[in-house]
Length: 106
Length: 407
Image 1: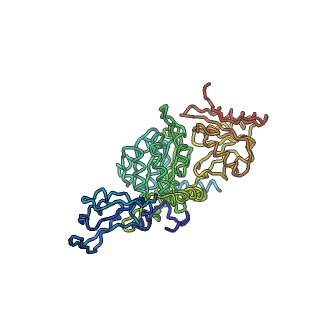
Image 2: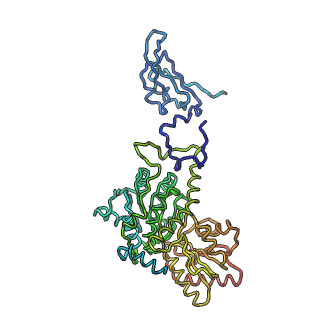
Image 3: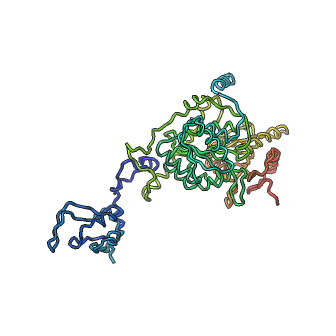
């Protein structure tokens, strides 16, 4: 939770004086469905990373070997602190390696 | 002594005395303060301001960017952008143009940009009217702008100079609108004393000590604010307008000292012993009312005029102290608030001001001069007589009087 500044403390005009501070806004709480990447099905094409509007797809230098023995230098993971669950990644994934899983109970 | 001092100040400061319309006076004030960016779209009766400015820029007499845009929405948006980058800006409009700007009015004040705009007031369509009244600016009264209403071409010139100081003051940083009568002032010629520009520029030094777009120090202007933040940021505008009253008075005082003038945020005319007070704004209403004071006083009525010069923020203390001893007051509005308790918008401000001080006072709401319907000095004289009758009988109407309305 960000500090709730008073009207006296906020910069006037709603100006943001600290560049890049949107990352402090944890938009992950807006989500009702979470994207889950199947690392074995993922072909590392980077399309989800390009399409994500947040951007909440993390491109990590983390080697991964699939069950069938294919080796990758990169792994794509989700930044769940900022993913709003819009589902664009799942929609765009050419190999259907991303599934949207409900986070709503009942 | 005082007069001699004023005369000597004026002798030094005044460059020339010329015949100007209020629109040209506005343009010459913009030239005198040295702006960086002008964006405007022509509309009657504002057009001659921006025609003159286009000429001055084209002739190299003003070193500014002149952006001829495709609409008023774009005109104000362009100066919003320029002001955000630290430029000194000017625009002007009237009537439908101000309505078309309306959403950007709130953006300009919300972003706290020191924009100055001239608005010769005009009636709103429908039916189509190009003639003057104050319907346009009254519809903008809640947009978070400081609003001055001038009554002479000289006052238009002086007010625009003051407007830059007010808008750019760090204790204010709110856009300022300078309004005056469409046609009756915008297109009529009066003598105006123009100042040597050195004095004007010394009075209005650029104040760039504010948050602005600068690639060396990146900031974001124009963000979305969630409900957790919006309220506080809008309250800052409320507070800025509240606090600006003192700063505006202070700048008026400094202007008077520098230029040998005598402005206040209200103008009190023969009020000291007045039983009957007409509250007016703009040129024609106030001029007629002052002439009516002469006629009324010749016939033994103690009449006076209170002219509202600063309309937003509303000069509550000055209004209340000016009328508190009067027997009967009438507010003459040149705009309509259909469906309000009373249909005169400034009347509503006056009675709220009295209420805020716990004062009960008979105040009459009068509407006159809509779409420049002719107002005669005798109409105002008759109002004083009417107020006298009301005061004698103790009976007065609890609804707006529409002067000159047929039927």
